[in-house]
Every structure is written in structure tokens, then in C-alpha cells.
Image (tube, rainbow, N blue to C red; front, side, top):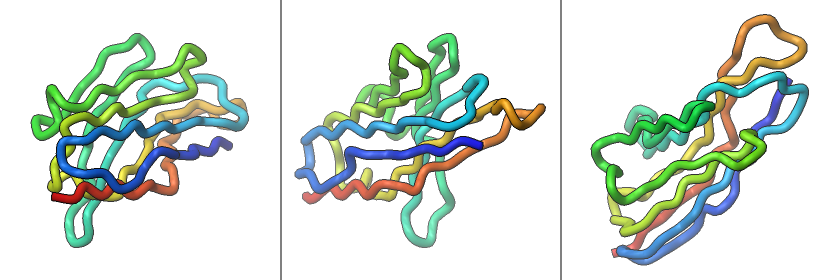
Length: 121
């Protein structure tokens, strides 16, 4: 089993920056893709950014050029640097990781508990 713990959300004015962090822990054999999603009430959860184990990244069009996803040296941590924040970025942000544990033959998707990001105009 594995766990994901996020931190770094908060309240910021439009144009400001925040950095989200997510740490994976547990009986982890390997982590392939790590990603950030966000969800606002009444809407589907949407992919914000993703990064593979070899560093390949993908961004949604709405955040491209403003957000940067990266992984720590130990590959079990993922960050989301959010710059030039807009009110429409307000959402609960969730960390996601595709993890192969020592107790499971197949990789499994794990989710963090979510962290609120609020951007005021």
C-alpha cells in the first residue's frame, strides 16, 4: 500500500504564485506517472499536469506556460509550481500517482486528500 500527502495550497491574489508538493510513501516498488488534477464543485476532475519517471511532461492547455510540474530526486515527490494564477484556477488540487507496490503485481492509481487553492481577483 502507498499514501500520498499534499501540501502548499492556500489563498493568493491573481497574478501570484503557489507551489504544491506531494510526497508518496509506503511499500513502493516503483512510481511511473505522477500528476496533478483539480476539481471544482459540479465539474469533473480534470488533468492539470503529468510527469513520467523519465521526465516527460504534459500540461492542459489552460495552464501551459504558467504551471511547471517536476519530480524530486528520489522520484517519490512531485511539485506543481503555479505562476500567474487566475481566479479560474481556484479549485481543489489532487495529487495522483501510478504506483507499483511490493504487495501488488499490477500498478495502482493512488490519490491524495486534496488541497484547496483559492485565487482572489
